[in-house]
Length: 169
Image (tube, rainbow, N blue to C red; front, side, top):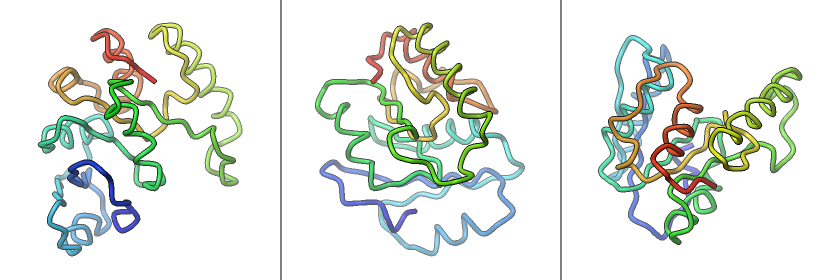
């Protein structure tokens, strides 16, 4: 994934958060020797929300991207542009733009995800199609120190962004 990150028009840093994995994620990432790469690694596994907070706290930039390792980094400029163009404070990705690979999401998860999207859309007063997408970009300052969920931070991030009056797209 790191090797596929495109050159972006903004200063960037890459933070790999190894959330207690049993593979060699941290070792492989450190071996890349990229100057703008930080690796945060710890055990035991703390959950996705804990990992997101570790990444936010390790970042030195004003804008943070949360990208699950199975998401396509070629979309980074599209995800970040609304923030850098001053049109958004929080960008929530969606997996429903392109056809999904077979087996990427279980059959019952698709309608369940859409129901969650409707509920969170209502609560945030923002049209969302995929609240659980592992691709989010946001201004760091309003959310830093506000997140507490350790397991599934996606809903918390969106709800707190709305509470903070962040412009969500």
